[in-house]
Image (cartoon, rainbow, N blue to C red; front, side, top):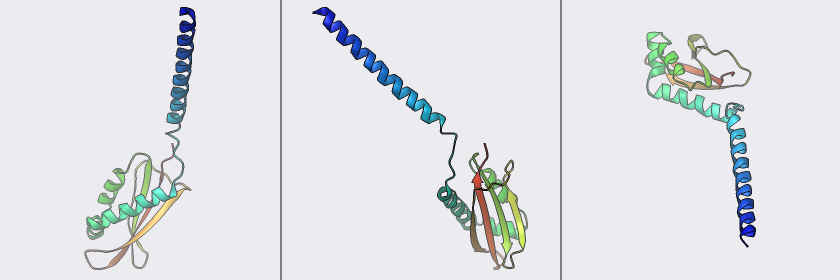
Length: 138
């Protein structure tokens, strides 16, 4: 009678070990895929639109035009997550480029999203902020 109980406990332990190893190996496989970010155009679009909205509402865009310096824009781009690259340009109503800033260490990409936002500067002129955003090449 004791031998039959021993076999059942042994089989039970083997099945539990197999289930645990399967779960662990599947978890490791999927965690290894985390570094591979697929191109998500919708997420990048939301990030770029939100970024331009924030920069307008807190006065950063107007101040950058007023002082003629892209330093605050560069500072904002540097605060983006490390896997994102970005470029911000400010144009006047005649589409002349006034200011531009690019996140350091970033090069262009074919898979980018562009957002444009109109804003009124401190001098009551209309300007256009254009943001390009893309995932950094790994």
